[in-house]
Length: 462
Image (cartoon, rainbow, N blue to C red):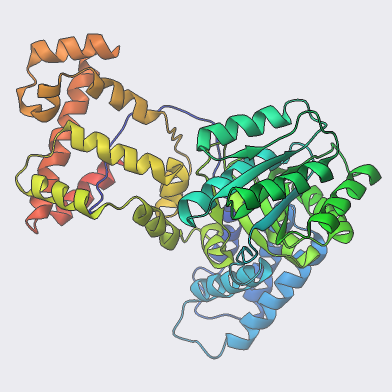
């Protein structure tokens, strides 16, 4: 994607909290209790640990888990209090908590087993947990990032809209789907789908199964039979992270019956307290393999415990941010853009291209929270992805000549653009002024100058 530049938008409101927002705030408060102390002592460690335990319990973490976690933190802190004297107490405690959080959530990322030909991925979970949406996201993930040829299989024969929903998702992703609206036995559907996959060279078969509003014997018997007959390469349990400790209890009950391989946490963009993410690995002994946010098919991420612990502690996740940027990187386009910037010829068409690349990277507020230090700055800002729509409507109201040559925009042209885009003339003026400022700063940066001015400008606009 080449160099990245920040641009000030008039952002329209949306009611959404960053994940683990309350937990992050409470943990920050626990570390602040060490401010002003020269070293860790038994007294300030005990005080900080008490606040950390309260923070975890408030995040819907089981008290037993919270107590055991904080005992480990306390033991580690007491063991290092006389060793690392050059490190500030608050910083040392943050590092200890980060390491323990990482271990609590699994230690390292767990991969998905796709060695079989074809590999079968069985999806299980309660109704409303997001199984069908996740099935589509997984198909998209495997197709786009793993170069696989997935087949979606509709085995939810009970929920009337389930097959239709999976069909719409499959069409949207241009991924094949196997369904049989006449057959009511999910085992027969799945076995037929497997033969279909072999005949059509699909190397991954994703089986979307039925859910219930609560755990019942019929549901458990059906998913157990499916697993026994299919012998899947991977069985994933999908759970709604917004249900907190209930999600952990449900995960444990399912695991006793079907012994699944990993967990998928959905709806992490909701007002989640974090209890499920922090407790499932400890309680069930199975890793979280994927996390999912929103309805968009590209909002699925491999779960990295170390990166998640960094985000919980407000340290950002620059590794994931860079990975997302690299996925959109086009070396040829980057070089073309660099040449235009050096000649001060960056135009509105180029700007639209950059917006689209940012959009493909995911949700704006989640992206900004990945950048170290940005989480606190954006915490109380309402950032809506539709903010881009306003900018696009202005640019799309321009003629091709105007998009190529921003300098020709006189008052007459601005009035026409305002009318065409449905915005007021002062909004058009503001946008063009900001674009011109950004264009000049990018040109100066391309010559190795003006970095300080750019950062100051970004700070003011933020």
